[in-house]
Image 1 (cartoon, each protein chain N blue to C red):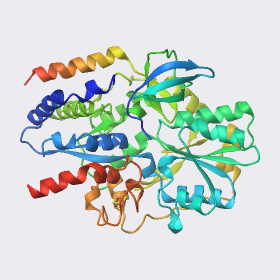
Image 2 (image 1 turned 90 degrees about the vertical axis):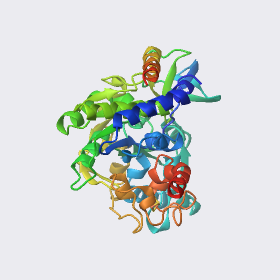
Image 3 (image 1 turned 180 degrees about the horizontal axis):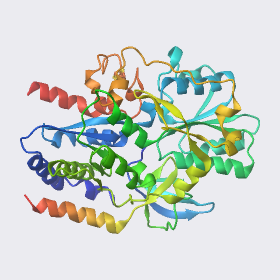
Length: 73
Length: 375
Ligand code: SF4
């Protein structure tokens, strides 16, 4: 039931829906549980609903932390 | 793929694995529970378990929605479909779970029940709108991730004035299950939890303070990628080694302290907490499940079919799902694992869902066992 990978919003549709791209697969999902989603955002999708928007800055910080750890033997 | 490939980098994974080995040292063992079935699946699938030193043990938790649903609740859905001629809509994972009398939702369909698989909660609402002559029941299951979508369609059905739609609500709560694991008499001693990814996007990281403060267990919320899980395990080890019990968040790209307020408000509007709900493996737990509020009773299948009652049914005698969901046993300790019970012929729920511990171990973990035994 868990779609573990984040989905890219490619088109906003009427009635709070959006078309997403999930590794090449297109699906329609509801945006009614999230605010301010735009085309180009990544969202976490669960049973046809976006639950949360991904924060690119936070993602970059987490990756930076991995890189830092990798430098410390 | 963005947000995926960079979180699977094999070199960084090796480095994290080395840091974990260093932090774990040669000392006594560490036992961490990954609460969520999505993590159980990912730990096996990406070989994360093989990257951990032998003194760091991961214990599978009860966070697999299909696995914790007791047989009696599936029987309830089957009886609605067979005896009341409703169109029963269910997520795909539930269809093959063994129920009483050798039935499952899928086998009930073969006997003439109108059981339909839905991908999204929205589809159930649409089926009701398209079939005004039939009663349509949505078999709603899951933790805090699937609850907001169910709340949303109930509101939608209400707005559209749908008279033929109701929900058989089996939604459950994460924290009471964590507490049940920690309160289990003679239960597994745990050093901390890998906190759920998607559940936490909804409820936020703050509620886990209860586990950290009252039970003195560290919680680190992690994403689903291998680097996320390795990093979370490293953070847990560091907490244990420095005597801390805090809530830390590795999945900050999607989880905030307060979570998704909009989704929480919707859930509160439609649902209230039940006095008690029965779980597979954990028994009846107080304040652990949700039901529809009285204002929405017309969409509550339990209120609409008052002659129907939940009947508690024990699991198959040989099935160890209960002990596995409590973290007391591992799938390979079940006598019929991989012989009688396989994904093609599941005897228990933990072999059905891809998030189930038995299914994950059958699909990805068995070869490692064989290799370890051989070495
Ligand atoms: S292997 Fe099958 S029978 Fe054994 S515990 Fe797992 S699901 Fe139950």
